[in-house]
Amino acid sequence: MSATAMNAVAEEIEEDRQTLQQLMDRLGTTRNPVKEAGTWVAEKVSHVKISGLTAGHREFGLFMALEALSLGIEGKHSLWVALANVADRYPELSEFDLVGLRERAAAQRRVVEAERAAAARRAFTASP
Image (cartoon, rainbow, N blue to C red):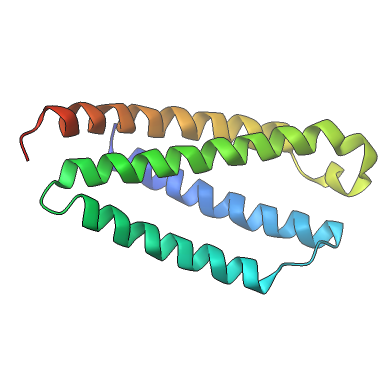
């Protein structure tokens, strides 16, 4: 897998985040600033934990970061599936391509999974 593929996934994830914000706005869902701040803090803490746990072992840190990314993409995929399942009850959802978003999340997961598996092989066979 290439850095180009991972960069493309990163760009798509940002687009998906923006789509989710638009969807929430369309549905009139308010954003909770406390939750948003908590998410930001959790992200920063996870970076510190990963760095601390993997000091001196770059490949293990990469593996853990890809594992977290993979889980996030899986969660996003599940969200798109859930929204597609209730789209008939919320006309506001009709302007969003939930099937396309679900398929894109699945494609992102495949790209990240290939990287994650390669990182796992390197991390668990390399000497610390």
